[in-house]
Image 1 (spheres, rainbow, N blue to C red):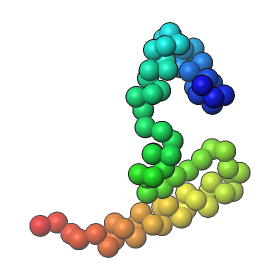
Image 2 (cartoon, helix red, strand yellow):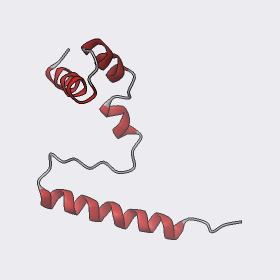
Image 3 (cartoon, rainbow, N blue to C red):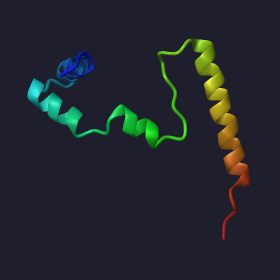
Length: 75
């Protein structure tokens, strides 16, 4: 188990009161971070500087508005 996995297990154990084995099982049943990114239209990270996150949010909002305006209307 790498450091990130160990940290995630520890958070689950502390938050949910699960055993380490149950927490590891829960993590293994979830999609990986890379799988989530691959299936996402937009990815935001709290690790970025606030001004970078703000720009990304504004860009994502503009793209969403464009997709909505270009979507075919109802039947």
